[in-house]
Image (tube, rainbow, N blue to C red; front, side):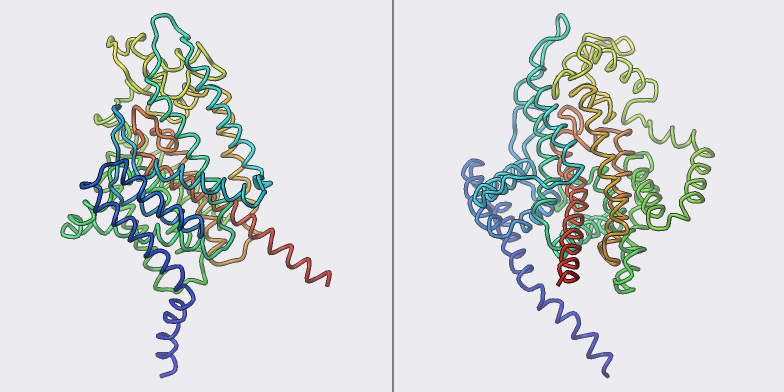
Length: 474
């Protein structure tokens, strides 16, 4: 009898402790639902002003709630505004500047215009600075008969760099409570589970197919869904067994869909697999060598099959893709340090025939894209940032408490590795305006948000250490 009462009292106690969070989340969900309902009836400008004003008041009071709303909106809110280009402004692109602006206003109000003293921030700021310089220099014509992209496309390309960095910094500076990081993670996992259920259950899929928006299920979405679910299922020993089993089922279901339903789309299953291997290696280092050897062996035995899957006829063939890389690298020689500016190299490509055709094309590779847009300086800053984030996560393994926090660190290390792997398959991390486009920012922003969670954990661990030192001194 006592065990039954305990089983019913624990959920009730958890709901009571988190009542304020759910109340605030319901308010935000109501605003988002209202905006979706009014979208067909109201002019975009009026709707932006109405929804923006209401959300600004809420997010100014509870900043982490804005991040929660950003995850929800990125995945399910259909609001978009056409730009006259190949891409459109979606709710993620519109909401991010609002959240960044509110954060800056709050820092001005508190007279504390400082960034955290964390190592990954310097290369990230440097990357944004290089992107801005490249945008200015990109208005110069580096080749005869060349032309630059339209201004709105250049602004969109630059915005991808700025807003991605902003998402990382927002979580790092505004999530100072471990409970908020847990809430962000669970909101994403619940929504991800709904999406996966829709892919497996046809009747339910008709509902989720309308709910989840185009671009929200990009490679980064799959990567972080697997990385976070796997790490919590395997390493969070404070989590109840049935929840750990449910997360394990979610991981297996996601990988099953990626391999059996979408095998031709390697971006949906290869980066998540990399995330699993790296998370397992980070959490159980003694398994690193055998797991790595198994992965390499499986890859070597199936290399022809994997290459054939990766290079499907829906994308470029292997020959075309390699030719595209060669030509883009040739174009980059005109401005190797700063590149050609955001979005511009796409307009240079017709000067160089690809297999005899004078057409516009993109590289389908994140790293070639970064060099083409921001030069070798931009690529150096990006890799420097990735290294610092990875090194921070590696050091945090022993500094955060076991349970959710430690499992999160393992998952973030896997997610980072998966994102870097996804970059070889396409511009999934920093979407290129003329390929994945701003629609892909709905998914890519998730990786930047959850990587920012590592800095949150760093600050939480630092504050906890200070408290312990204060108690010891007393």
